[in-house]
Amino acid sequence: MNPWFFDKGFGPVFRGKFARALKWVPGVVLILSLLYFLLFRKKNARVVDIVTSGQSDQSKPKKISEIEISPYTADAYLKVPSVGEGGRWYDWAEWILLWASSSWRKILLSRRMAEKVLRWRNHLLRFNEHERNLIWSPEDSRKRLDVPSDEHVDMPAIWVVELFPPSGYKELERIILKNAWDRNFLSIFSHRKSNIQLLERMRSGESWSGWTLASIADTDAKFISPNAVRERLPGSFSAIEIHGVRIGSGLTALVAHFQLSESAAKELDEVWHKEHNPHLIWVQGAPLAENRQWAAFRVTQQARRRFHDEARRWMAKKCPGFFSGNGISQPLADLLLLENYDPCSSDYDRAFQDPLRALGITGHHYHIRNNEVPKLLLLSVEDMCPGVYRENTQGFWGNKSSIASCISHLDAYGSDSEFAIANYFDRSLANFLAAQSVSAYVSSLESNYAKARDLATVRHGKFKAKELRRLRSQFLVFSMDLVSSASGLEEFWSGSWHEIEEARFTFDLSPHLLKADEEHGRKRFSQVDVNEKMREQQKKKFAQLMSEDVAHRDILSSVASIGSSVDSYALGRIALLVAGASLVVALATLALANIGCSSILYYFFPEWVSGFACEDSR
Figure 1 (cartoon, rainbow, N blue to C red):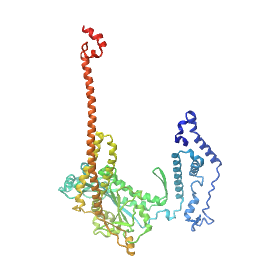
Figure 2 (figure 1 turned 45 degrees about the vertical axis):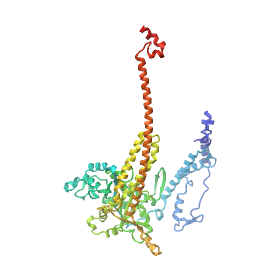
Figure 3 (figure 1 turned 180 degrees about the vertical axis):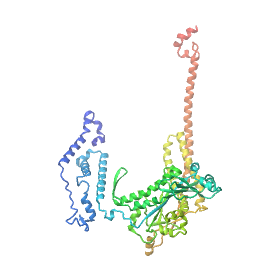
Figure 4 (figure 1 turned 45 degrees about the horizontal axis):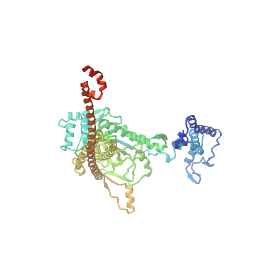
């Protein structure tokens, strides 16, 4: 701990033992002053009369400085006062930190130490808040999560997408050959082509735009498809079906449909209804106090995210592609089916918004609904739900009975309605997610181009040929994937994506807002075709990237020319040095070849040579 004048540049003035002793003065002064403060300090004079004579009656609110507070708040602050108003460990820490950073003592602290003291004092507030949350009355509805006892949620399925651009075609071939998921297909259906043959025909445009790549069942699954292969799957999943989807002629998507086991499909509901106690957690090195409601939000969202992470890990292990290879979360969507609450009804239930937020469902003022079954909604997970939020995460949700009533012959897709709904939408949602993954792909390309552009100057600052080759190869991969993908996506963007059953969605206001607009005579909101809007944005981004790619290639050509000239100049200098060294070696050889009075060596060193060479010659 140095005094302020050492930070101002006066340290060199103090030399030797005096300087070393002086550095201890602030610490000694602080310790002595602290001992005096602890031994002779007066009791805290800030006494607040929180509770009046009727403090036991919690039916009436109390008043502090004309501010009305609830009885729960008054009771909690009576039992757990603020920091510095008791004899708890963090009260002592608060007194010490407050004393050390006030009055004349603060000049002894460097700026960095003062910031640390302030940060530590803020941490103490979180410990105090956590202690108060623990004794806060559970009857206070503002501090707890109330989920109706008759409401339940099921999560029967998860879809994960992995994309393979032209540069990842060999990797896709390796995955198919290594896993051999089509061995039962080929043994049952002799006329069926192998996955490799279907992949080659599909990418060349000779075959249809999608096929079932694999049907995988857990070794403990009770019911499986005849052509399924058995593997040990993660404990939450009973079966996985992988679909291959061709997006244009350059991109291939693998969409895995994870079917959860019956117990795993109910696990989120169990966590949702469970009573949660306050927690003290650490976020980025700082404590965070959560009351019962916020703890319920986080734990329930983390329960949903656990299934997401499990599915993504399996996909990254078995089918590593562009997203997992670049450290990007694979596009994912799950299916949440509610028992009673119907978001498509005209009534807006404000009290049910907190339970929905615990599930990670927000954005209740607009709906992205399915055109075929309007009761099925699509919603992106927002960062206001940190427990479940990850990049490229979405959810399909709605009322189970309402969705089932819109589907004829649902029992043909399974005996349980929640799993039957997932099976009914499987192919159409898989194709929609595959098409949507192009947006995540182009966003990743933008990010990669930006990183390569920012590092280009650093890597090629001295025009080294090695760095030039690395930079050139990096942009070459980007350019090949970009050009091949963009040319193949023209068919997809034009709407002639034949033989593909893609789920279509429409963006609209929620029913309660539409009803309010109608009651007030406002013009109806214009609906947006999500699929077409998605294609327009993708086309626009690809066009922008294509123009940037042309500019980058021109810059690389210029840099390559300059680099070649600089490298040639450097090589020329090296050649001159080598030639000079060769000349020296040749002269030395010539001089030593004939040592005598008539040699070249005698011309430069006559006395040394005449001493032994000329006498011998005579």
